[in-house]
Each structure stands twice: as structure tokens, then as C-alpha cells.
Length: 62
Image 1 (cartoon, one colour):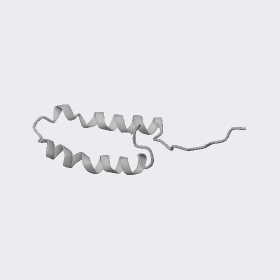
Image 2 (cartoon, rainbow, N blue to C red):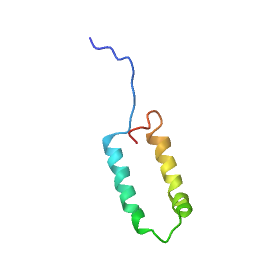
Image 3 (cartoon, rainbow, N blue to C red):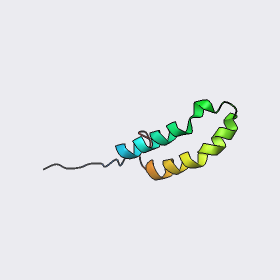
């Protein structure tokens, strides 16, 4: 009999791949005409949403 002592819910591999694909589509390296503040304002809401939904319990993999 196996006894579970702890459960650490983490982001699924599929979700992690989807997020990585989305970040690559932003093409941040090509946005040299934007300031760091402008880039942060553009992506903060998206990244915050990912952290709240996918990284609720264990954020390290995210």
C-alpha cells in the first residue's frame, strides 16, 4: 500500500508549452523601440494571470 504524504499540484507540461509558445510569439527581442516600462505594462497583466491560474500552489516550474 502506498501512502501519499503530500501533493504538490504543478502546471501541466502541455500548459507550460503553450505559455512558452505564446511568449515566443511576442518576439521581445525585436521590440527595441519600446522601453522596459512599456514592455512591462504590455505583458504584466498576462503574466500575472498565468501566475494566478497556473502557479497558484507551486510556482517554481512556471
